[in-house]
Image 1 (cartoon, rainbow, N blue to C red):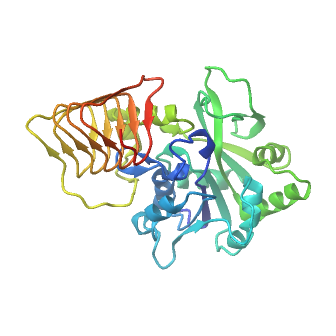
Image 2 (image 1 turned 60 degrees about the vertical axis):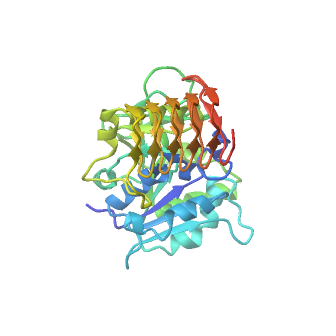
Image 3 (image 1 turned 60 degrees about the horizontal axis):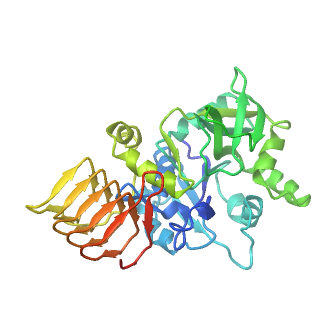
Length: 369
């Protein structure tokens, strides 16, 4: 069943504070990833591919980059007569300091939507997920609330992770907040929730009436009041919670099996298109095991890298195990290893920068080194 009765809400600023370098001028959801995408492209494409025609993207600050990337929503097939993409920002003094306050201050938008259900989703999760399976599961179980979980080790960047235990019928019997972190596999809930919008607003109003502003505590309390079920996402999932997570995911994306899991031709990942000429490789170039976007000029050596659009790499340069963002210029005879370079950076000739796989060096946007 297609999800045209579901309103999608994406919280673009999820865990912004965990990545101050990369989110100083943008939200978490608009951080460039994989050479040509932004993090939000994955969750937004999942919704669009599943027939969710009405999507609101909640942004609290630094949302100019996000607004430019999303545009009218046409890249995601969300600008037609009965579909729309809306960027929801603070207005008229409204508070977006917590999830419950944010949802409450958007009550007009939510209540006036034609959809009966709401799918709440964080903006830092990367997966290729079929929301129709979730909606069918929710309907068949006659659930009041369904949370999506993944079997995995809790990412280190979550201060108060949520995990659940489920019975043989997939019903949630316990929800744990901030369990002791171990290297064992848990049922980790990142925050994606499906429920009726009337139930959502009822719980939010009741919570704020008693000054409860922690959405995780609200969800935990709901386990004893409602039919709460857990739906397992068995596909590849990455949660971006730190610069290290960001670096690790980009390096994982070089692996064919990860790309095959994320880029399903039946459920494509959409993004804003930038028309560039094909990348050019000079006579002195050498490229191994890397992702190279369009519009690049490669004259040096590149290995185990993710290179975004419009990057220039000069002769004699050696770039390895690095992430180079859009329109960066790397001079001749440079040596870069384990480096994350933001957009529009200029690395001058002969420079050498080296980090480590557990501590990559970050170079800020528009820097000159």
